[in-house]
Length: 236
Image (cartoon, rainbow, N blue to C red; front, side, top):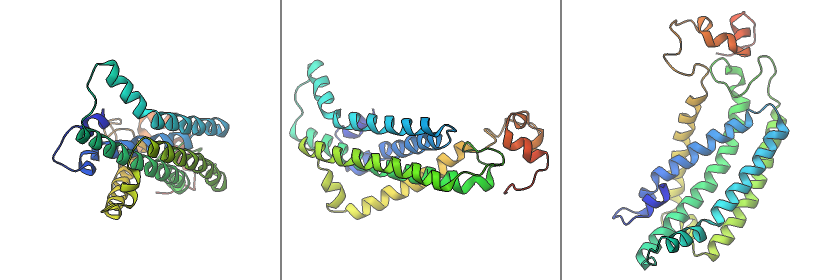
């Protein structure tokens, strides 16, 4: 839906019409990567990483053939040159932002898991109460995910180049540096928004008392139970 709306004729340049698409990409991907990094079963987490990479590769390399087949099935006429150029420009921006978003999400999710352990009373990334995440294991898991992402991205670049997607124009064309800075700003903002999804207190109205330890959900959390019982070692 985001791709379709962004590729409709518009007087605005594609990097403006794709803003919603780019923001959704990174927020969705970072949220998913944080959930994966919070898994207790690391073997399951690794299989999930493989599944995500395979799904991403299939979806991105088959999007144009599926789009063309759907238009033919619906009896729509071939795209006009201007429409096709707009469509391919949007797809190029989507691919570049998706690659950057996945790489950033992998790194940010691993950093969140390691850094926020000292603040586990405020943020929950699947922490145990008194078992600190193994930073080396988290970095290895992130490296594995980055390796799969690199294989996926290189394959997609070659396939989509043969399909006519002008991805290099986004990476090295006029205004490319400014646009990459723009993507980085969106990713930073999305990181802050996603971080609020992992606060320990799920909603402002989920507890009638200002004391966290008197909230009903506190007794269901191993971290909060130990915190409320006065155990030391908890950050602010």
